[in-house]
Length: 68
Length: 68
DNA sequence: TTCAAAAGAGCAATATAATGCACTTTAAAA
DNA sequence: TTTTAAAGTGCATTATATTGCTCTTTTGAA
Image (cartoon, rainbow over all chains, first blue to last red):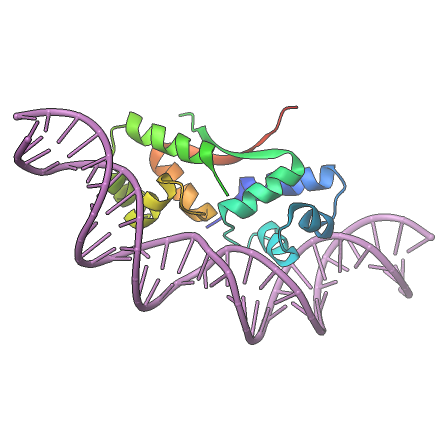
């Protein structure tokens, strides 16, 4: 399964802030391997992992109502 | 870790649509046990699980920029 | 083109998410 | 109060997410 939008958001935000994967891993408390997997579209991260990454980047994980 | 907002959103949406946990489990393809755990605040679901539940309820998992 | 930093990938160990089954608890209607 | 459908829990198994280590690939600046 793909999480294109989630991945793209994290990646864009990280790059906008000029933070490397390594630094984000440290800041967020998520393992570097896990972050690499996620950003390269390989993983199926847990809510906790997503939330940790979001926290470090000023992003909040949420559900949005789909418009028709 | 808590995912209060995510849980609340799923639960409210499910109840608004008058769907039982059992039905949502069937519709979404998520195991009933998994859904129960999630809604009772016990779990740490994967992105795939969250997405499946969201899909069945017309909700999209996303990151929102935190306002100061 | 070279070189260094950043990103991506294979492997293996450990932790834990997903799941079904059976049982208990809760809540709402008769 | 009784009933029962819905929700929550304990346990065990299987699948897989997380992680570090090491190595390869990519990328951008000199």
